[in-house]
Image (spheres, rainbow, N blue to C red):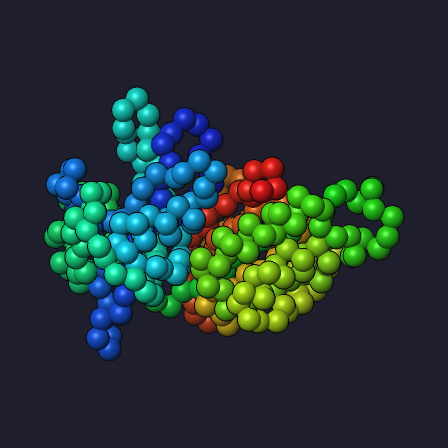
Length: 307
């Protein structure tokens, strides 16, 4: 059963990786496997998070370091846990498409092989990696990666004397927005939507500029409208997922938890809680169809201290 993946809160070694793929011929594709001489194994590219690094940033960095490929991140796939010395290790996996670069052997990885899925299953050294590959293959290519963002820090309503719709980001919020622009760029968004509130628009303005698209206003995803008509908001979210490959949608704290919980409940995605801190992102993977259905949800917390 698909489920919501939240940040780990205990003691664990955190890592990130990807199923890196590229087109092969007219219809097929191949995936990248790396050989690590230290372990004499074949695995998917992955590695530990650096201090202060987020999972998407680490996944993209590790792909480049181990394979030489610059990549575009796609759907969140799954997480894998296994024991290491006195701790657990948790590896979070995304799909990633190779867009440029060239492999150069190094101390950590001495060989790279591009394989058909059938060959990759046989070559991989670990069942856990084969499980990640099967999750990737099960998604297919008819999916939308929707990035649902809560606006960055904007101070309190009580401390703002003007129209609340015009309450702007604070200095910390501006730093969060800059970080989000960098992180979301890894996914190469093709559409940017926002609740018509200044703080929401400011949060994704840099994303829209980098993606060379105009921000589309979504009144149904603003708090006041959503409170009165939640099903309209959910219908808009599904419509955006149906019509886009990688949309960014920015909304508010009075919308996101209920919206994500409802789509999870309708689509049979198990969840325990739905956090939505300012500057956070939900990576929602929808399988497209007449009615897009949620198949995976990964919560990315905001950067610490607004940085």
